[in-house]
Image (cartoon, rainbow over all chains, first blue to last red; front, top):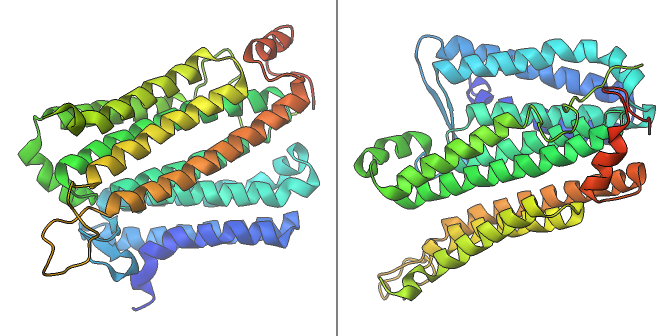
Length: 244
Length: 125
């Protein structure tokens, strides 16, 4: 019981720890095993959390034992447990099949770095889903974005570099807009906890800073979405262009 | 509502717009990253300035003090600075690789040198 109550933290920590491990083991095959194991562990934890939260129960985990409105809270409810299951499931299922195409696409000495970046990207996506803290969302967003830029630049076509650069510029502008929005909401409500913020927003709903914050958030999230289809005359960013 | 009570916001908005302008208007990849840095710095100002209360002290509870400054924005921005440094490092690394692959860091030249190549299968590095 005491072990399973730490599942919300382990959900994010296991892929996070797998990334430096994959860098340290240096051998491509070993890194593959480490990251695949971590992805399947994350999938198993997501499944366990989903079984708990399926009936509408909410799992709340206080990071560092700081109680929720003050500290960072990880919150698993019915929706987020389902999204966790999808994200972890996709990573766990695609990773074993990635081995063959990675062999073809990426030089042998870079394999472990590819798997490290994959683990970091998985960490970021799981973190965005599970966290209940507005600023934490930004941090995980940047973890997943930065690792995605590297994955794009790994393509063998030299235009992958330009695509990755443009993705980085647009993505950073988008992320900064999101931070501005979160900052304005924090100034108006005095809290970063999403559930607490939702309660307090009712008192200040029609004020101008809140409307500006929502505008910044909309633009920022739209920029982040738009990034996935680069329109600046450069090729569509793809992590792995097809071999000739 | 004097000028000075909004001074930090004026600086913030100036930095924000100047940074965005550099990112959009400049074709040099390094200068774009500089603009991106200025743009991110404006957000540091946006967070930290409202945390300071005039006359407020460090948040250590003591009978002599009634007004405290908010320490949380500093902690948040420390995180944002780290993220900004990581972004800048990755951007500069990408520019180095682009320079090796294209022999230029001007955006127009890069687009022009890719112009002649048919889609999807460019020059191999």
